[in-house]
Image (cartoon, rainbow, N blue to C red; front, side):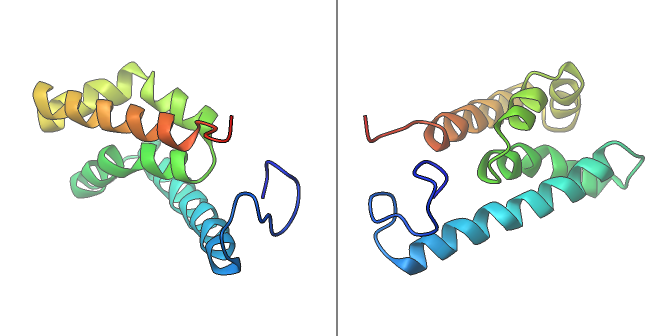
Length: 111
């Protein structure tokens, strides 16, 4: 685990398969975040934009990229695109969900 600087941490992971799943989840989310970020920064099809607006913050969060997650959640451009695409109510619900996910993923429950 990253917290205790060991490949398998009995404190953080109940089983070896849980450690592998966590590692793979971080890896896959980083890959997805990288691809989405590239597409978001270029002109892309409307359905790709919808997917990016729905998922990019979560891929940053679960990919262990908290700075990128905070950056996109604070971005006026991202919020404006969300409101244009989904409307105010749905956009606010998504932002609250992203923030709750961020807090949950980045809170140390061991203290």
